[in-house]
Image (cartoon, rainbow, N blue to C red; front, side):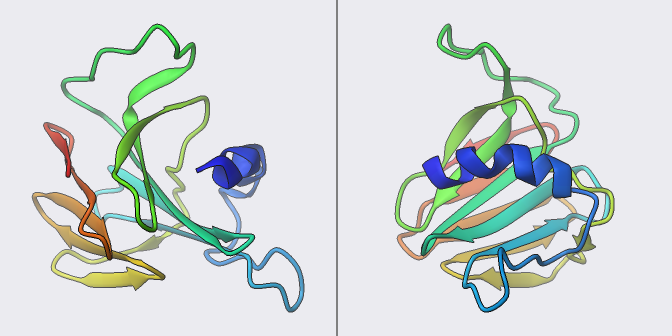
Length: 144
């Protein structure tokens, strides 16, 4: 996620703009924003310098995970996934919640590069081709 962390200030500034933003004309870098119909979960899929990352945030987490001492920002509502690695909670100072992001209807599955996301009334499930991912809902979040 290092490439995504470098881009987060830019992502925050662009969060209210287009759904897919190429970094430059002809470039293969991509940023796509999407959300669940409830607007309770928002995500960014990005490809930067050939590396794919997925970040999803839950708007109102009922039971937030304990923030580690190493994190001085928000913790417990943001989740990251790389193309092959395990999902993890993120320490962040911004958000992937974009009110203008494309809505993925309940029951719909979308593929973003190496990631597959399924939107259900019970939450959002995203995984990579290695079988790692997360299941996110306001009341519970699980990483696998």
